[in-house]
Length: 422
Image (cartoon, rainbow, N blue to C red):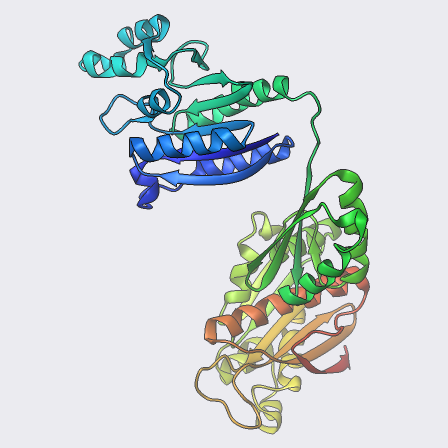
C-alpha cells in the first residue's frame, strides 16, 4: 500500500519544535511494509491543507495527518477535512461527554467542544475518548487524523492505525532494513560498488541510502529478506576491513564491545588529540570495564615524566615521529599494565607545519601482545577534523588488530609503518 503523510503546525514549519512524529511514522510504516511516497509539513492554513488532502487522496491508498485537532483557533484540521471532502461537521456525543467530564477543560468548555465536531462518517480512534483522533474510509481509502502530541501520536499509531491498515491490506510485504557502518571508506567508492550491483535483477528493488556521519559512513538498505541477505554477504566480502558494524553501531562502541567480550583493558597516550580519543572511548556506557586510563602528554616534558619517553629520542627524532609514538605507546602499556595501548602524536594545525612535517601529519602507536607498531598518516581538514580522524583511526587500528590479528592494512591516509619488539 502506498501512502502520504501530512504534518500540520506553524511550530513545525518555523522549526520551534522538532517533528519527531515524522520520524516515527516513517520508521514504523516502512517496517510494516507500507510505502511512503510523499511527506509535507504545512502551516496552520486551512486552504493549503485542503489542497494537499485532495491531491493525495487521488494518488494514494492512505493518508496520515498529524496535528490541528485541538480546541484553539489555529487548529484547522477538521474544518479542512470537511471542506476537502464536502462533509458536514457533526458532534460526536461520546467525545463531547468526555470533554465535559475532563478537568483539563473545566474553565474552557465552550472552546473545547470544538474538538467534538467531526466530519460525517468519522470514527474515533481513542477507545476512552481521552485524546483526539479519528479515521475516515472514503472510496475504499483510509484517512487517519492523529493529534500532534508525540506521546498520543505514537500510542494511536501503534494501537489503532497499524492494525486498521493491516486489516485493509490482504498481502503484506515484510520489508527488512540493514544499517551498515564503515570507516576509512569514501561514500563515492561505496556508491560505485552498489551502482554496479543494482544493475543485476536480484538487487534492482532495493532501497539504498547513504548518510555520512563524519568520519564514518552509514549505509541503510531496505528490501525483502531474499534481496538483502546476498547484499550483506557481498559487502562483508568486498569491504571486510572497512565494515565496522551491521547494527548501526559506532566505532567506539564496537571497540568497547570487543574489549569487554575478551575481558581486556586499554590505555591511551595522547598529544595532538588533546584527550579527544579518551573522550570517544568514555562516551560509551560501561567503558570503565575496559578503559584503564588516559595520559594527556601535550608537552615534551610530560612525555618524558609520565610515559618514560627518552629525552634523546625527542632530540634525535622529534616529538612527531615513529620513534616517539612507539615509546609513548610502550610507556602507556607498561605504566597502566593493560592489554593494549594507543598513542597519538602529530600536528593538527592550522599553524606549525613545515615541508618535512606538514599539518595533518600524525603518528599512531599500537602496543600489545608482545608487539609494538607505529603508523604514519597524513590527514586533511581543519584542526578538529584532523583530531577526529586521528582518534578514530587509532581505534580502528585496535579493532583490526583484535579481529584480524594485524593492525595495519591499506588505510587511505597511511604513509608507513615501523615495528618494534617488546
